[in-house]
Length: 511
Image 1 (cartoon, one colour):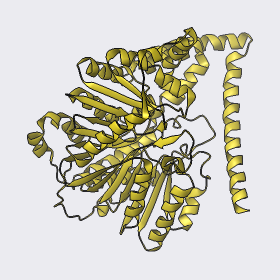
Image 2 (image 1 turned 90 degrees about the vertical axis):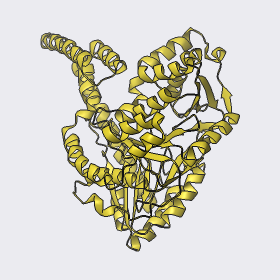
Image 3 (image 1 turned 135 degrees about the horizontal axis):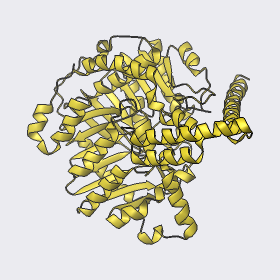
Image 4 (image 1 turned 180 degrees about the horizontal axis):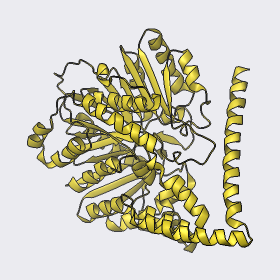
């Protein structure tokens, strides 16, 4: 009976939300299409406004040309409708309250991260060829470089799941989980059983999940359910059944941090499809990175910074700093990073671009979506034209048909430049990884698309000369055995395919 009430309540909530949104869209369309003398005056005024807004879009700083071109088209074609939607969706990152909160937390975040000893000067001497990227992430973006950290690459999701349960069971002080998607099932229920036990034994357990990511997956009162179990919960950007300016920015990060000593990141959410207990698009191939040692502290700070904003409660982040043995024999350097749409600094994209620019022999890439801006497209093509072995694996089975068609629209240009494209024929590849020259790699949550690189909160870890780099490379090469190489012939098609792909490419920034 309780389960039926849960489903009924969830269904009513979502139906009401969708109905209200459709009603608001219908109202905008009605005013746009209405006739009469007064209406003609209004239409003339909106035409003038649309021209002025278009000029603003063109001259606006910190905006990529693909967005500008698309918004100008929409605004001029549908003056009132386009202007309203521009200020609701394009101006997402101008939310003053969220920016102010983030600015207030930023200073505390830097202080908390400074507890770790910087090894940047050492790295500049030992690995000078990669020092510029490390310097950018630490001195400009604010993410310290660490050593004394074991790295373990985990793929597919089943491996991460086993390791996560093992580490959660060892928690002594706190467990922080931040995920885009949480869904009841074997994976989440197994995790929740451990969380309940730990919370009952005095371990601080906190969870953050994204409300849109869990749309139709969790009820709106799920934080109350967790609270009864002794688990604290905060929901990122709760969905409202109104066209607001904040719904486009989502928390797409994947973070698990235990006692500030162990951390997980990557592409894996807490739902059964990620561990192939639920089959939706064939075999689900995903990847995560486990860190043990000093670098795990950065993920605790990332989580606590977001927690303070969502809970609207100030606390001393440094109290969670672990007193760990730094005599680990792990080799190499690790640099966890996060990316925010609020600061106009595209950290995730810069990590990817610098790996491409520094490559001497090869760059191997896994991504579920390949929807590129001009910077990334140019970097990929230039690397291939310069003799770098650039290989990209994307899914063969689509999870979103139009997005998959848009991904395929980039193949021809990339292949013509010398980039090798493969599709994972066993199912859906959800990994977001770069590896280059047996030296550097990154594993994280950011896809190669506009949403991840410009609109979402994301995170990852940059590595140089760590154990996980070669493991990632070996996994990539073995994955190719389950892939089909895409040729120029495969990219050819009739006029319908050509027209459709170009149409989708034009609207790619909205996907």
